[in-house]
Image 1 (cartoon, rainbow, N blue to C red):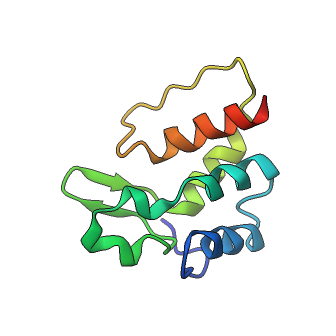
Image 2: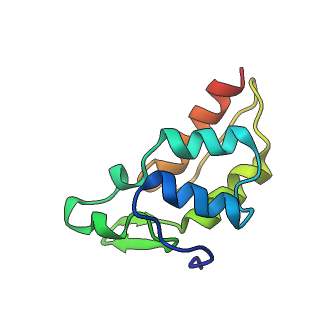
Image 3: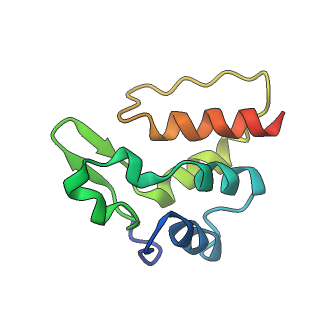
Length: 106
């Protein structure tokens, strides 16, 4: 899955593309995506792929496509006081964005 939006040159351009395609619809989800740079969750030698709307896997490291994460974040409609359990959390990218989303929404 993925490939729904054009690749960006950096994190902000990726987020702009996700917004334009209406994968990111809320200000809170946008803020969480902008606050957490996707490239920080890639191995150095693969960072050229960080801003593509594609899943990435290298051994046990896995990231879903950004459009998938944005759909999850929008659907969760997280609010302060709610719990979040991310089974198989992989790199922690999604968990970090969710934590940021809850923290900012307070």
